Each structure stands twice: as C-alpha cells, then as structure tokens.
Amino acid sequence: MSLVVEQRMSDSSYVESITHGWTVSDGHTIRPAEVHWHLVLVKHCGQVHPLVVGPWVTAGAVSWGADAEILWIRFKLGTFMPHLPTRKFLETETVLPEATSRAFWLKSTAWQFPDYDNVETFIDRLVRDDVLVRDPVVNTVLQGQSHDLSPRTVRHRFLQATGLTQSHIFQFNRALRAEAMLQGGASILDTVDEAGYFDQPHLTRSLKRFTGKTPAQIVAERV
Image 1 (tube, rainbow, N blue to C red):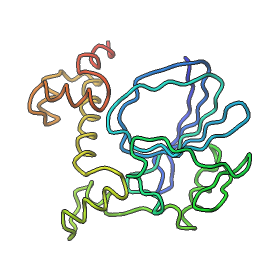
Image 2: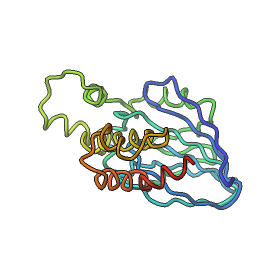
Image 3: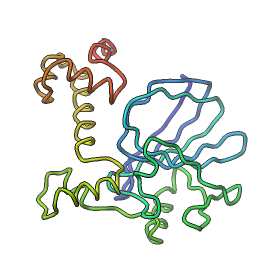
Image 4: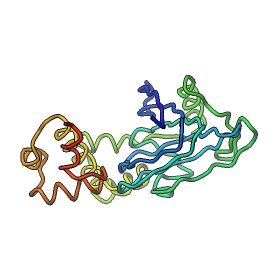
C-alpha cells in the first residue's frame, strides 16, 4: 500500500471529516468527483505546503510522491470563506503563502499550522475572526426544508458557498448512492430503477463522470 490514512469525523458544525495520511511510496489512483472543498497541508522534506483544494466537477487521476505527510480538512457543504468564495477555486489547488516555517497567511493574518488533534481549535479561531462562515440556506435546501427564497437567490447562495449548483450536488449524491447500492450487491438494473435513472446508459454516464468507473467495474470490484 502506497498511502496509509486515518480518518475521524468532526464535532464542528463547519467540518465534515479530518484525514491524516502518509505516502509510503509513489502511487496513483482514480480521484472521484467532490462537492466539498478542503484545506490540505502537505509536509515534505521538512517543509509544509498549505493548499485550498476546491470541489472537483468530474472524476480524474491523481498521483503522489513518497515520504509526505498530509492533513486533509474536509468542510461541510455551505462552509466557505467570504473573502475567497468557493467558486473562485473550483477544480483548482491554490497554494497559500507561508508566513513562517510553522504558519501561513490567510486574510492578512498568519495562522499556525493545525495538526490532526487540534483542527477544531484552529477552526474555532477562523470562525471567531470571520474568516470562515456557514450559509444555513445550503443545508436547508439540501434537506428539502421549506424556505421563502426565490430560485435565483438560492442559486446565488449555492454558487457563493459551494461553487456548485443545487442540481449538480443532487446528481453527485445520486451517483454516490448508486455506487453504494452496486457495492452492496444490487444489480445494475435494480440500481437504475431505485436511484432514479432513465436507463442503464444514463447510469453509466453518471457513474463514469462522478466516480471514474462504470457500473460493471464497480460490480467486478465486489467479487
């Protein structure tokens, strides 16, 4: 195994999960699409490189080198930085400027690098200084709860906070649900019907776009 990771969920209302990993050797894999954005810290050869990694609209390939330590902070949908809305780093990796060997610049302030165990403390400080906020409209809409906002306003709020449209997030979540069904033993035709696809080619296009795999490839992996 060329990549070893440990992951935990977060009790922060701004963070989905926190992952800590090490690259044992060079490697590569299929990177699925992603609707969440991440703050990623890569430590290599004694230096730490802070990155803002935006959502990825489609699946792609990813590779890495050996001997790196990586911390991934995955933010909940609706969490964003007002001075740097998520749509500005969609499908990009933005390197944040380093302030010192132990800190980086964000919104004209030097922030000490967090570690796997103190991420929540770091996030609380970002929230307290209004560097990080959360738009409740995103969760309200995704949960199907009632609201009095116009479609145009909802679209604007989604694009600002997530960089994506509500429709795109729905399609992504449906693909993940279909992938989980196939991995759990459902047939391809049953998955088409239960996940709400028009036909098998529609399912195939969706899974290829969001997971990088066809339904047949997902089924083959469970054997």
